[in-house]
Image (cartoon, rainbow, N blue to C red; front, top):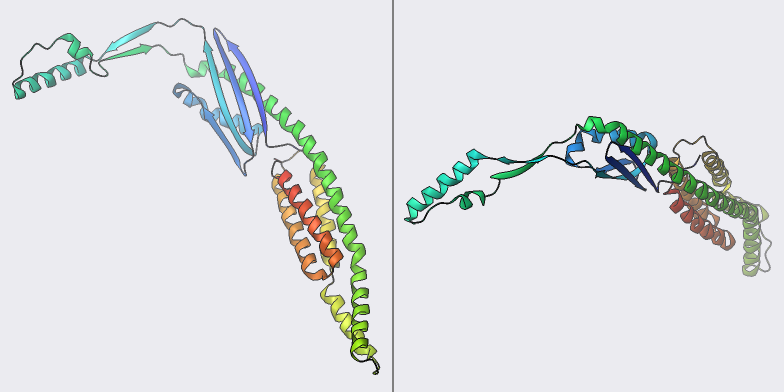
Length: 293
């Protein structure tokens, strides 16, 4: 099944008095990139969460947001750094002596200094939270994949319609191609007759010139390769669900190469108009392909 690279997923899980909410936002990216925004004490679980997400999303950028609602009453304590307090006291005393200052050093002077007091609270072991986090993460990934598949189905319908349009333009070019040589022969014959009205035309030389022109503007090989690319694109759209975005992008580049060659060789206004329309439609098709996983 075709999948888009954009999407959103959300999952929740409860454990004790804690509620975990994980949100995933996915956007286009050439490779796989997972950006997690976790509290510092959960960094130990970051690699595990990244691998889990990448098992669901092999291509694209995924931003991960975690919200923790904790209803547990925590016992908070205050830690006193006595060595630091003594160091502050000694430093203030030295300054008094060096500068000849008077006055008493009070406890307020000491406790006002940074990091003398620091609050502490007991933290749970992150490993104990993993089962609930895993549950929320799995739910978010399932939700994300579901949205990417739904958007992928819309992309597939759009791409199939555009592919039909490109096929129609290719058919128009194929039908017009034989007319190019005939039109050139008629123009060349008329031009020669206008220049040498009373002299017989060398039919052999004329045939050689027309044959040379026909060889120079032959686009049969390019049209065959275009048909092959069309078939490969349809095979990707009807594939088993493996990521095909890069392959489709490559095929689009190859179609651009073939249609540019056709435009340079055709030397015909009708074919050039079809080529311009083909390239415009192909550019829109490639923009859509950029959204495919």
